[in-house]
Length: 161
Picture (tube, rainbow, N blue to C red):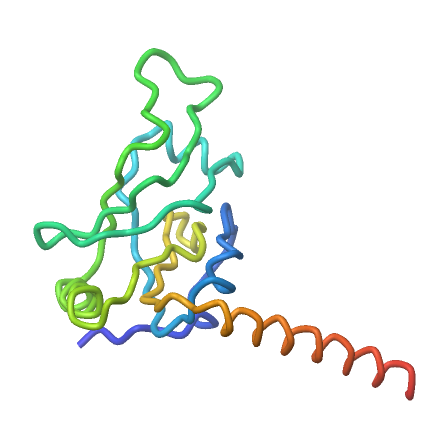
């Protein structure tokens, strides 16, 4: 059975886009690595470092996982066969992983959030997809306090030696 890997185990060679806000707005339960079905000009745009996933999400429909609202701008040297920037893109996952994501979304009210888009060592475009639960306002304040305390603690340790 394919087990989800921790984020440290994914082979990230070149990170193209990162959703840093997602780690603040959601509590991450599980992280999956998924391939993306892309057209030729989309791959070229990503290789130039263009693309954003800040407002994107994923959904399970018909036994398939789709990345919605991810922006990969048109390739500058593309011709009339250039791609549509915000089209839904199919994510390539194992059947068991799709079932696990579907169960998490339907039963537990979780959300599928893309954390980053990157190229692995083999040159394949991948998405780091998280099964996450939305944080409440008090949880966000608590994480801000924790982050500030870590920063202050580092500063104090640095001053003392």
